[in-house]
Length: 401
Ligand SMILES: Cc1cc2nc3c(=O)[nH]c(=O)nc-3n(C[C@H](O)[C@H](O)[C@H](O)COP(=O)(O)OP(=O)(O)OC[C@H]3O[C@@H](n4cnc5c(N)ncnc54)[C@H](O)[C@@H]3O)c2cc1C
Image (cartoon, rainbow, N blue to C red; front, side, top):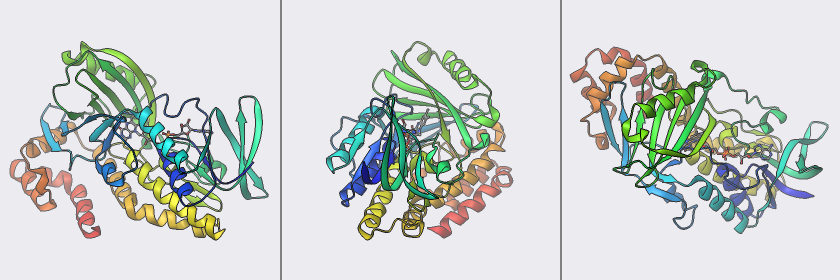
């Protein structure tokens, strides 16, 4: 078997890449080890409304609910309310991730990509050091598939990068361990995504409640692996649910456990190789949200691959246009948010409480560094010292933009 491109993984990053590569005329094969695209779901299912502008999904079947915004609860329960426009990557829609992923795969197939399910890629085919394709297992059968470009869209546990000579090792301080229930039989009063912070309730992470309907919500937790131990994420989530009567009355119709990289991105190109999505560590290190970057990065990757196939040039040099463009699109933001994550990890709960108290009445639609500083300092002057590193980063951001 010979293709221009083999995409390993049929998640959003893989399908978006496959779609735009196929649209540019490349002969594309997606390989997926699961027996059904998007199943099992490993996601809080929140996504920004940014995706409306990209027009990558047809219809509305993938939407469980349209959110009005987000509420962030500090450790002492002070609430800061944000509209969907300023709330970040995970508030806009709550989706059905299985349908979402299947819709993206359908779009890829509609543009000409092929897909092979129940097939696990077990290694790269190489001629000396040159990547020539993949070795895979389809049930008990071992197969070899040749391709000019291999796309590692194989998620947080990615192997493709390592096999291709890219160090994708994650430190425990750069990995969130997650657990989530989908609870039914609860009252979701309004369309807000709720985030709960605090070293006690979720060390190095947060708890989320994302409504999927009037009586269904995803209630999940992320805990930084370096601050966690076996079973801790589930236990803290159970404690949280037990202490919230409105959630405690619910019944779980789904439980999941997974991991999210909250790291700096890795190198994403080598000769004949590209990494996208979680495999590239394209996740927002503060929120753990990766979906928008999967789509944006996948589109860029697909377009560059299309050009490479036309030019018959699969060198890292040619493919580096992908790396240049994703860095412009969202790379600076990931780098900055990684630094913010590090600073936030050193902050005490009482600092978050003071922050929330200062910001609870702030009009975020007029957000500016100066306005924020005024709001913070007027109420809690001591915050200025604690937040100096964050404010320095934010000055950098204003210069960038
Ligand atoms: C609990 C949890 C909650 C989250 N909540 C949110 C959220 O609310 N919003 C948000 O934006 N992000 C969220 N994320 C992150 C988001 O789910 C990921 O960023 C996103 O799924 C990454 O997509 P991807 O295409 O890179 O990889 P994946 O979706 O992980 O897809 C990788 C695919 O590759 C396949 N694969 C892997 N290895 C092989 C192999 N060797 N051969 C063949 N196939 C292979 C896998 O089976 C899988 O289908 C959450 C993550 C977790 C774990």
